[in-house]
Image (tube, rainbow, N blue to C red):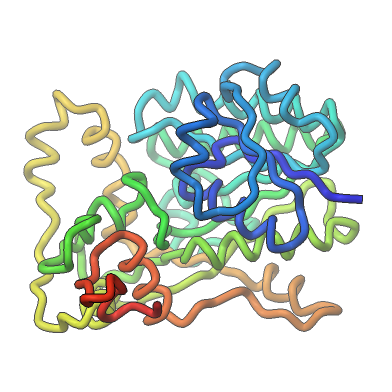
Length: 338
């Protein structure tokens, strides 16, 4: 029988890549969206998604969309860091209720926001979650709620990753909102802070493929599972920017400092900037994800490794998708993989 996956937030960066991966693995995918027509247009590259009208804040909408599903992927999040306290947990409750009602596995993308300095520099699945920020506390509360739901019979899968990048990332990614300027050929780049400090990145197609492979082995998963995705680690954080300009064919492009002073000045008036400042510490402290558990699980029986697209290929695909590569007369990217 066809496996059905409902993705809440399927038009977003994480949700759309996960939808594409699940389609490759034989799932029938439904996407919940307030405007199915806009979502279909925005995620037309994904494939054959069944779009269903609904709001993640409305538990009845999510439940109706989840009928017959064996997987519910919770990819919804408050846009631009805004109103996390008022939106994040209620949206998650809708997905929990739907997963419980239909007996589905609930998939949730974890972040590094959950952790404070006592867990650094290598964060594992068992590291203490004692954040020093408001958003971190909300993320901890969300995972605690998921663990509580698992004790009530909801099967949960949390896959945690670092900052993400990919061909279809929107403004919610540091890469597409901070390092480069989408839809403009790469000229100069910005790097957030502390260029010599290590930083973890997740190429979204690799992360989505990892989730699909884990779901293919559903009978082997515990009721509550948490895995950390290693992704791409740069001992010198600024190397990502250096490799990006190389991938774009502009190795002499300048790498400028991110204008934090403007963020500080404007933060009293812009909520998103206030929230960005709260997470600034993750750019000045090396935080790496320990992925031994994931690697061991994937290798067992199948011999698979953590999906890991070579960084130059990943960056070229990302830059091409974001419209940051020069174009040839035939319309293809001059330095892309097409």
